[in-house]
Image (cartoon, rainbow, N blue to C red; front, side):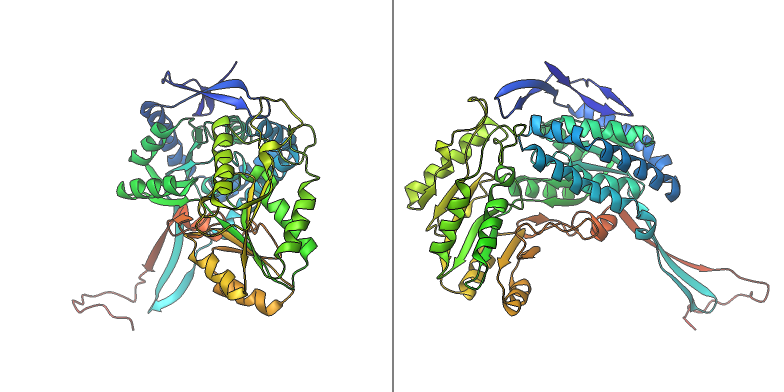
Length: 496
C-alpha cells in the first residue's frame, strides 16, 4: 500500500494528522494507496515554511528565478511520460490525453520563463519639473493553489510557475483523489534549484482548504473546481482579506449552423464531448443544432461513437473510466434522469463493454437527442461522457439559449459564414470562444477564465492576468535635488 504524505520545506513528510483518504486505480477499482489528509496544524507548518522562504526568494534576481524555471522545464519535458503514467494510474484518462495535459502545463512553464519581460514597469520622466514617476510590480508573499482532480498536472502548472517566477512562495493543495503527480512536480522543482520552502504540497480535504482560506499568512488563493465550491472559496477567502481567483463549473455549448461542415462538426463533438471521459471544465456537453441539420448531425455523431473503445487508458483505448465509483454512479443517475424526462437516448453508455477490469469505474459515451432546457441533463454540469443535443430553429434562438445559461466558461460555433462567426463572438456572453475549434483553451500567453458563474474574482489564470494576480503594483515619484534648488516654500505643491 502506497503511503502518500506531503512535501514541506524541500522534503516529503508524513504530517501530524492520522486521517487518511483512499486512492484508487479507476481502471481496476482497486485501492492503490492512502493519502494523508492534512490538519490545520499541517497546513500552518507548510505556510510557515513558505513564509520563511518567501522573504529571501522575493529578493532573488530575475535571472536566477528564470534559471530555475528553465531547469524545471527541462526536467518536466524529459520526464513527461512518467507524469502521464502517474496521471493515468490515479485519474484514469488515457495515456495520450495525459500526455496532452502535460504539454499544456509545459506551455505555462515556458511562458513563466519569460517573466522578466512580463514584470517590466513603466517610467515617465519630468512628470513635473525634474520629477520622475515609475511603476513596478512586487510579489504578494505566500499564495495558495487549490487544484481539482481532473487535471492533476496542468491546473497546478497554470498557477505555480507564474507565482514562483513573480517571487512568491506557494502552498499547493491538490485533489486527494490523485495526489501523486503534485508531489513529483514539487520534487522536480527542488531538483531544478528552487529553494526549500518556496513550493510546498499539503494533501487534504475541506479541513485543509479552510485552513488555507483562514491562515493570515496566505495572501492570495487560486482555485479551480465546481461552482458551489468556487463561490465558497471566494467568499471565505475575501472575508479574510485575501485576493481570490476561483474558477468554477461550466455548461459549454457548441452551436452548429446549417452551413457548417457537418463531418468536421461531428468529429469535434465527439472529441470535445468524450475526451477525458467528459471530466473537463471545457468539455462540450450541450450541442445546439440549428435546423435543419440536427438529424444528419446526430447520425454522424452516433456513427463515430460506434467506433470508440472504452477501457484501460494503458491499453490504447479512446476513453478511460471515470475517476471514482461514486462519480460514475452519479453520472449514471443523470442518464436515467434524461430518459425519464423524455430525452431520446441515441447511445446509452451504461451498456458499454469496456476493455478493462470489470471492477473499473466504467460508463461509455452517451448521446441524447431532443433535449430541452428544463431537463437536468441540460441544466446541470454532469462532468461525464454525456452529450445532449438541443434543437433550435435559428441563430438568434441559439444565442439566446447560450446567454440564458448561468455558466459562461467556454463555447464554440461551427460555421463557414465569417459574418455569423464574428457576430457570435461579439454577442455571446462567454469568456472563451472557439470558431470551428471545439475546446478553445487559450495558449499560455493569453489568460484562461470564464464569465458569470464560471468565475469568482476579477483576474483569470496565466498570461497577463496571472502576472497581475500574483503581484502588487507600486508607483514611485522621485525627485533628486541638486545644489541649484533649496529654500522654504509653504505653498501647495503644483505640477509646473
